[in-house]
Image (cartoon, rainbow, N blue to C red; front, side):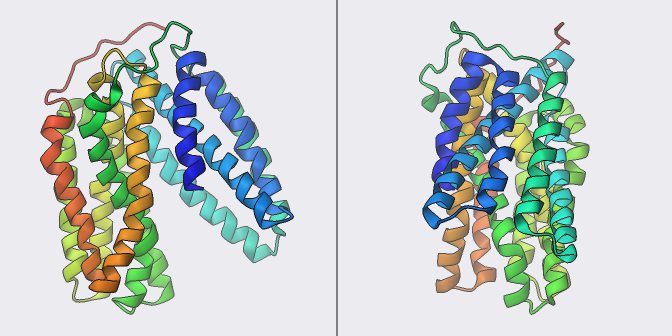
Length: 337
């Protein structure tokens, strides 16, 4: 899955740059939901692995195209919008989890479950693209102009942000069970509280991004996430650990919108899709490598101690933010479509 996801990011950059964000999204939504049912009925492990690679790649194309479309909408509106758009992702995660729980409780067979979700996802996704800008695609658009140097520091900050997200997704509930001896219900509620905190903060995040420099947003967010991680490490009881993971979610919430929204501005002259893909690739690497690193550290220390890596990642983002991101909050006038 990780390999397919990473391969899909440059593919998304090329598609968005050459075709525009809306056509790229339509292609992604034609493939990504459509592979759910074949995944449910894959006849062998080999077929399953191959389908997962293509499925993950299509998801990455959607990821790049949606963020590029979000940046285009920001330019047209003259104000930040990515935070609220990212909040809908958290809402989608919660909705998908609730639907999966209901399907399992009803005893719905997996192919029927996946087939229904695939049909709904394809129809809703393709319909939603009709309201989006086509994007600035075209043969004359520059795909890249040495993006690595200019986007290196934003990429490292994205790496740290996605590492925090991956750590929470993989270890929050496990840590509550093994370190705090919480019930299964409380362990599950911990990840729900984390996700809810991310969604709630993102709902109001665009106002903060419009008012304050993105570098300062990342610094405040990183300090908040680091404080939550320290609370998890030192938590004397499950309630304190639950509060720590919730604080981590609140701190994490604005990192991705602030970083990805700044990528085209930092890499002026490079196609927005290419800039977003470069920073997202670095972020995905953090998401993929963070959880195994925490697992390895847990073998040497304890899982609670290994969560200290989250505090280190957050502190790194705080330190690099002034050099990686704009230090002023630009005032953009709305652009006519």
